[in-house]
Image (cartoon, rainbow, N blue to C red):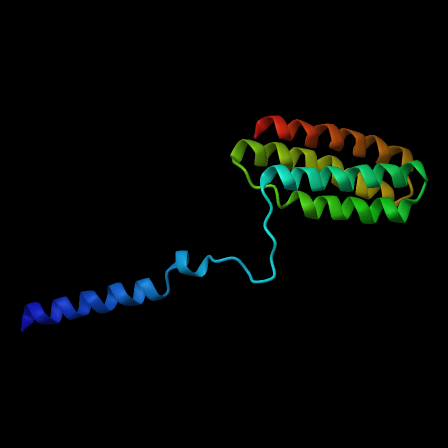
Length: 127
C-alpha cells in the first residue's frame, strides 16, 4: 500500500507538470505572423529605405513614423545571439534617427538612417 501511494502521487505530479508545461504553452498566437530571419531583414530594409525617401522629401512626421515601423519590424529578426547583438546595435541608429525626426532634424535623421541601412544590410552576411 505504501508503494502504491508513492506511485499514484508521482503519476499525479507528472501529469500535472505535463498539463501545464511551458512547451505546450509556447505555441504561437493565432493572429501573429512569424518571418524567417532573411525575410524580416528585407522587410526592415524596406521600411528604412521608405524613411530615407521621406527624409529626402523633408517630411519629419513621416520619418518618425516609418522609423518606428522599422524598429518594430526589426524585432522580428530572430536568428542567433551574434545576429541579435548586431541587430541591437543597428537599432540604436534607428532610435537616434527617430529622435532626430521628432525635433525636425532631417539631416541628422537621414545620416542615422543611412548608417542603420548599412548595419542591417550587414546582418544578411551573418545568417
